[in-house]
Image (tube, rainbow over all chains, first blue to last red; front, side):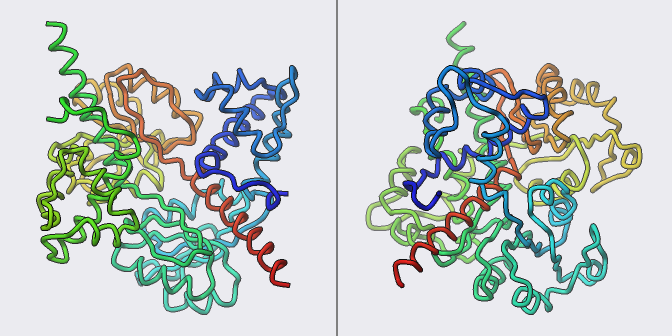
Length: 222
Length: 222
């Protein structure tokens, strides 16, 4: 189905996981039906935006009845590719890599950690949730033999660029990158970045902006 | 200065940390001057976009000479609020909380971890980088006595919402939220979200889309 549709905008795609999250919560609370208006109030998005977004996928609502929560949840899950399973490796098993390796929810969604790699001899040989941490020297062979879908990069900046390029050369098509660099990859490779420092700086920017605005308000009041 | 300028668009703000990151790398490599064209090639953004973005802040380039890297780096740093220091607490010191507490780079940028809190009695009393993990029962007093700027929420979903509200009530204006919920806060409180599951689902969506596109291409070739 998806391939026949028009190309969906990045903005819509970015909102889909959020819909999926809210619908999952509704399901947990045994809500079976919801109108676009109710969903709009919960999510802080306009009702027309919701209708528009969901129309991209043929729309699953019925006029006057609202959306069937479970159906919509399942369909958006499919659109997000969550019906499949993905073999995932994590490269760099420091604190952040360990946090991700320990996150059981990823497995529930079909993201199966199949390999852990690090250069640190103190980590190599240890296991997390039954997966042994291997020396990074075994990475190439492992990737070539195991049809890995996604590599998670939780490496220092200086190493991430080279290893990212190697992984692509060895056939990996999905990179979840936590290193503070922008990887240069061919068009058919997908990179999703989580730049923590960028996020923290955005927060500090907004905090400062807020302070400035408040000072101005205070001046006006005097 | 900033208060007198027009309100800067969210899109520009989101790009600033990236400029800051690239300029920092140039500095590390002793590059002192760069044209918007060169910067554009490195960053994969058009040169006119770069000029436009930096014009928001009065523009720091000189026609024909390019940008002074150090000056621009410093100025963008100031705009991002990085000249200041921020007192940060982390609530939820599981794997992810520990990862963030151990990340020395945050401290270099002025984000000082001043408190760590958890409910887990096995964690309470342990120290990370000299900061003792306290029982969450002490959170209220600590926040009220220490003028905390930013609270990092690395808590399970069910707890994050209540604690987020408490923190706001106790006067915290900045929340860096890693819990998979959208916090409802007053207008003068800034929330910056890092929703890891959302990011991973965006990646799986794009991987699937890519597969569909490739299948279509293969069909056409036949």
